[in-house]
Image 1 (tube, rainbow, N blue to C red):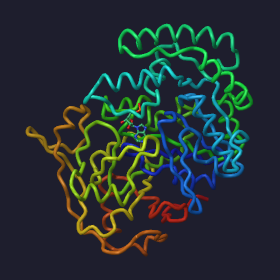
Image 2 (image 1 turned 90 degrees about the horizontal axis):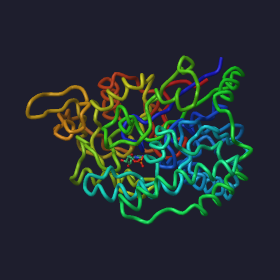
Image 3 (image 1 turned 120 degrees about the vertical axis):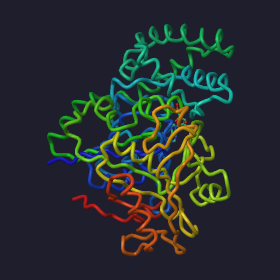
Image 4 (image 1 turned 60 degrees about the horizontal axis):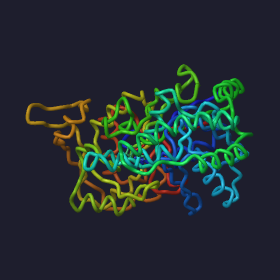
Length: 429
Ligand code: IMP
């Protein structure tokens, strides 16, 4: 029988999903993105070489794997073409393996202009978006005025729809935000290039996935960002504009939820966040700096420094529930090597009460003080360890406690950037 797996971020993104997807793709024939756009940044290190992907699924580096962008993804034609070119330069012919949903919404230059103008206008209340136009593109989708991939195939219709969109968005840009309008010609040129580039890969994705499943092909659904950035379940309004949680797989790909078998929650052994929004376990001290330095915590897409903090078991437990996680893949354990003590957040305190669940209201979350459990660190290197028994006892105790608090077993531990630096606790046959 076909095996289906969802791999998603359990925290605020950047958990190291790219490596896990890449690793598990060895057993898959199809890898599907179902939400987000080129706001994502997945870093893969293979044989010492670093690859950063934004839009194309991490499975692209494997032979014989079909990589799919579902209709829940928002696609910048320019970003997609740039990424295909970059992969070509590395000797990977992405177009041979890629399938793009005809129903996916396009991210166009006016979305980027709106994203930037809005962030600027918000001042210190800014979300801290990646300024890639992701939010405005999703807004156009739900407002039912978006241009979609299929529109690229009919240039006259594309131009008509574009004109209507530009009339509306340029009014916002010039009259409300008082910034420059976006012109039509460069977008038409981009669309023309994209039509030539992509016409052979535009696909009916739900039909493709149904056929693949019927043919016993293993399918991986690759999440972008993390559960706590989900537009419905995250720390709203400091979230991205898509459903990053497992529920988004079915809507964003057209693959029925009844056929999803395993949901893998990727989480760092500590916590990071990029952009604004509450982060109860954030460390603004030397330990925070140490985690940032050792963990090389810089955004793969924007190059922004990531905020770092202790593992938040309250937030991760919510995430495990939201996603019905089967097991956890814990990454970057080695970043904690050498710390004298390691803290785990097991609850929150506000002046009025104690919390053992993540508050739904982000204003409340901003008031929460973490309650910590303190665990002894380990004074040896876990870098590159590949078996559970070789981990220091203190590291095993720490991981076991995380799993217990989150209520989900550990299936995999990553101890370094390379594909092989991984402890497998689950079999993937
Ligand atoms: P947007 O997705 O660009 O609209 O940004 C909304 C929020 O999601 C911001 O806090 C971003 O920093 C965050 N975000 C978006 N993509 C990623 C990602 O791939 N990793 C981590 N955070 C992200």
